[in-house]
Length: 631
Image 1 (spheres, one colour):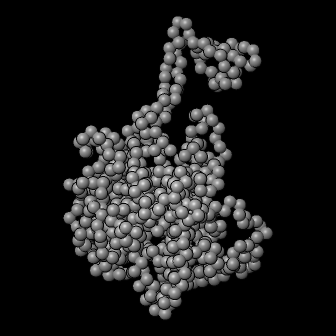
Image 2: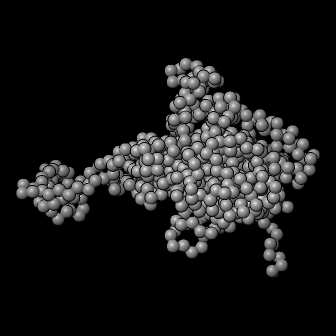
Image 3: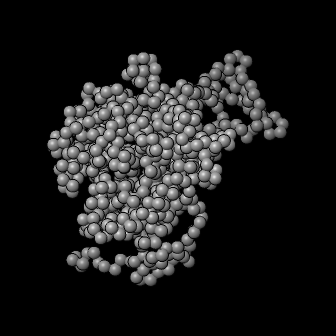
């Protein structure tokens, strides 16, 4: 039997808020929520954004006054809505109206020349040919310059790209634990991984004690590494700014660091460790590896994720110079009113002019179906498979190709073979890559239209998270997974509310690309689609909790499912307890810096097994010859 990978937890952070318990999804569809869910969402966001704190179980504002839950929206609703989703870039990243740069200036010394004094050790090497040096006392020199001299002066410029999908205003992951000299993306990784683990209703060790240490895996990556000053940004900038490169810049900037941080500081994993980058499909690339390892029985428990926090002047300029990002001029031209709406810069499948960069860290917890049954784990959904295909020969490395036709068609065909044509035709939907570029809206919609015709699908719902949180690069398909799980839970299909209408060149005959959120029937299947630079195409087939539980019952029997449901009562209570604490700002960050460090003496081994201190079960060494028919 092939194990079914079950999603039992999710966590993280993006521009919409916290991922666990669908807080981010609820923010996106806030106007479609019932009163209880709406209040819960505003309370959770208020504490996340440090507008409120919790003291003795009561919500308290900055003046120390108690605020009733029912009053949170009235008091802070406007600030919460304005401080989430895509908006003008905040100064925590950089000032888009006065972005720092160095202006070159060539000066002519004139007949009188230029003269100044300085310390001898501050002289450049080699000396410019127009400089004459005269030694003075106290290790100082006088510099006389004749002719021209070129200098670089600190300056600012008006950045044409002014919007991004940023973490909610006031959310500061660095303040939640002893983050030392860590880049923002790795801080978000610690937050997201802990959030995902707590959302399961179990501690990590409670799950680990049920399995062998080598039946666990961490699968994660970032595309850009960490581009802030604490990571590769500092390594590239420091010498040019006259500063020293830190010993931590290079190491913390590696794209493996999200995986390494989860292993070393969150889970203490000694099992499988894996990092794969596939441009904008990176989350799905890592999910594919985890799914295949679970299906093959190599692992039973996985934490899968990605982070990118790359809202920096350098990355923004890089994408901007490719004409990939929506800029002020393009937005004004589209709307024709001379005003750029920073809330509506990302417009998938509408009249658009480029994508909007975002930041996020997204993680999910997977386990095989037998372990989920044994633990009574909460079922958020399941992953049938993930397909990745390239585009073949290209003239432009960023241009689309045939690979995404293959991944989408395989995913739909797989779903049809498992749950039947009716589910695919009537109760499936697409979480589109939906980058918000003119080329994407045409090419991606054409793929969906042709696949829909091939499988006789009409009115196929299409949602696009990037309209609300921007393009977070590595975690982007993690944002899509989070939205899909929210749709399964709430039966609300997010419309693309940042567009007035679907663009005329979109292939929309068989698609349902709504511009408003709408109540949808219970869905069975979500197709998570991602198109990355270089031909990194990926599509995942996700099943709803109802479909997943039905499959589990068919395999394990009604008696096992009843036992599972009995166990799930306590698990659900533990989940509710964490949700309540998290909504009140107690995120219970897991950061095990140096806690339980293992040495050589902690490893005991024989020719049959290995025991490691801190793990309840042994690692059995392979003793069967898998190639017995060949030797």
